[in-house]
Every structure is written in structure tokens, then in C-alpha cells.
Amino acid sequence: SSKSTLIRLSATPRSTQGHIVLVTGAVGFVGAHASVALKRRGDGVVGLDNYNPYYDVGLKTSRKTQLLDRAGVFVVKGDINDDVLLRELFDLVRFTHVLHLAAQAGVRYAMIDPSSYIKSNIDGFVNVLEAAKNAVVPPAIVWASSSSVYGLNSKVPFSEQDRTDHPVSLYAATKKAGEAIAHAYNHIHGLSITGLRFFTVYGPWGRPDMAYFFFTKDILNRKQISIFEGENHGTIARDFTYIDDVVKGCLSAIDTAKKSTGNGRNGRKKKGEAQFRIINLGNTSPVSVHKLVRLLEKLLKVKAKKKMVLMPRNGDVPFTHADISLARMELGYKPRVDLETGLRKFVKWYLDYYDVKKKSSW
Ligand code: NAD
Image 1 (tube, rainbow, N blue to C red):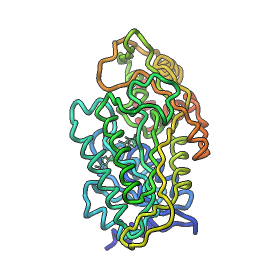
Image 2 (image 1 turned 30 degrees about the vertical axis):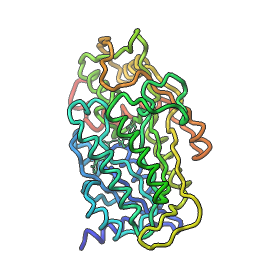
Image 3 (image 1 turned 180 degrees about the vertical axis):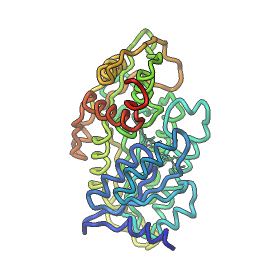
């Protein structure tokens, strides 16, 4: 069919070294940027996404035409829980890697729809791992875990060796479970797996449920913003990491991934141990929410109306701070974009995308 031709075309690498990558969550924030970056450097890319309506789907559909179509990434509309679809995709294309980014994201939404986290982040992840292990030649897996697995960790910076057995949100619990499940698949089925713990990724085409995004919207609309304070009036801080830095980390995780050693359906086991890695991808430079708001005020040229609120127990953690020495060693990772530079790019995109200058007196 024409659809399978498009999938094949999109999966054909331009360079001989080119990887062939299945990107799940490809119309999401990180997924769209990563798919375009992979395609631009000559890898074959097939996207998979169910266009989940968790946030404004317009951001995904317009993203698709503006970013993905232009780059030539074909996205299959479908759910990671659809095992028939996954099997068809793996039969059609010999993926060398899976960049698994599809998930139910966000911490607070779990209060409203807890089962969506189990469905996408646990059941869906297992389904992706099953499809990968059953492929004729099993691909290496790179997937997104999260800094939220560190919970209320107070040892800073957060190192991969720190305790992660005290998640404080269902989202974090599903990411932690994902790490355990991935380890089991690595051990039993010889899948090569890299779990990347992302730290508060921000930038153009970002997620509207994240603070920097809705603060921008509310500040521009002269609406009051609530700034949470931790218990004992502790300051909330995040290790904001710019999207381009995270994408570079993902690409280099793909480049440094070892081959899976599992049998797959070709029945031949490869030599050696399959690789299992869990790596922080952060900026290692946490910024308080007060500083975030000051930067936005400066960039938007509007004073924010602030209200201090004691942080409810909604799953948010008071602060995050990544130790990135392992990422530096394993991936040659070096974050390059500081928060002010990254926010300037975000704000520029925001004003343009929402046509703010034309719509308001701004
Ligand atoms: P996003 O919501 O923009 O992207 C996720 C994409 O996955 C969406 O386009 C959604 O439609 C798709 N999706 C969800 N469930 C699916 C399913 N069952 N089948 C097929 N597609 C499905 O989120 P993002 O910020 O781009 O996050 C990407 C990954 O990184 C996620 O795994 C997220 O948990 C993780 N992560 C993100 C951050 C961050 O700050 N953005 C931090 C830590 C971890």
C-alpha cells in the first residue's frame, strides 16, 4: 500500500552508517525535535504516535506539518499498546534502534486519570519491549525515564547511584517501574537498553502543562500566577534542560548503544553481554522558580502578578539537580544552553506561534 511505501521511504537511511530508528511519541515535544534531528543527519526515521489529547493536539498537528513533514519524517498514527501494529512495523522495517518517548507525561494529571499512566508507561512500554525482542534482529532501545524517580532525594546533585525507591507521584512510580522492567528485559532477552533520566526539558514546541509555558501565557494575559513554596518556605528549583541539549544526549545514546544480543526471530544469539545503562540528562545548574519568573518578566517585558502558595502534596518535588558526570563519560554529553538563552528562544517561538503581537496590544 502507499502507506507502507511511505514508511519504507522514511526508514531508508541517507548515509551508509545511518541508523534506522523507530521514534515513539514522535509528535510530542521531545519526539518531534529528536525525529527531525535524526533525519537531518541522515538516519532513517519512522515515527509512531497516538496524538494523545492530554494537551492541545493543535501543537502536535501543526508541529507535524511545520517540523516533521518538512524534514520528511513519516509518522504512523497508532498506539504503542497495539501489538499487531507494532509487529507489522517491525516486519516492514529492520529497525536498528527504538527511541521510545511515548508516555503519559506530567505529574499532576495522575490525580485525574491514573490508569492512563499505567496503560502508556507500563503496559505500552512492555509492548514495545516485546515487539523489539521478537524482531528478526532485535534493535537497541533508548528510552525516556525521568528525574522524578529521585523523589524527595536531598543528596545533591542527584547521582544515578542514589536511592530511587521512594517515588512521590504515580508518574514517577511508572518511570521507576519502567527502569525495573527494562532491566529484566535486558537480563532475560539480551536487549541493549539505555534509560535516560530527563530533567525538566523546555524549549520551543514545549508542553503547555509545564510551569515555564503556562507562566508565559498567564504573564502575557496579566493573570495572577501561583508560585509554590516548599514546606518550611523552601524554594522550589528545577534543573531546566534545553531541548537541543536533550536531543543531543538522545542521539549520542543511540550512537553509543551496543547491539542487542538476543535471539530475536532469527534464532541466532550474538556474542557478549547486552548493555544496560541508566543515565541522567540534565543541565546540572538548578534555577529557582523566582529566578524563572524574573527571567520571563525580563524577556516578555511584563511584570508578573505573583501569589505565594504553599506547595500541595500533588506529586511535585521541591527541587532537582542532575549530576551529569556519567552522561559526560558515556555520551560525551555537555549541556550548552543556559536558562536565559533557552527561554529567549522559547519566548520568541511562543509569541510567533500564538501570534501574540498581532492579537494583543503587546
Ligand atoms: P509529550 O507528551 O509531548 O510527548 C509524548 C508523546 O507520546 C505525545 O505526542 C503523545 O501523543 C504520545 N503518546 C502518549 N501515549 C501514547 C501511546 N499509548 N501510544 C502512542 N503514543 C503515545 O511529552 P515529552 O515532554 O515530549 O516527553 C517525552 C518523554 O520524556 C516521555 O516519556 C516523558 O515522560 C519523558 N520526560 C519528559 C520530561 C520533560 O520535561 N519534558 C522530563 C522527564 C521525562
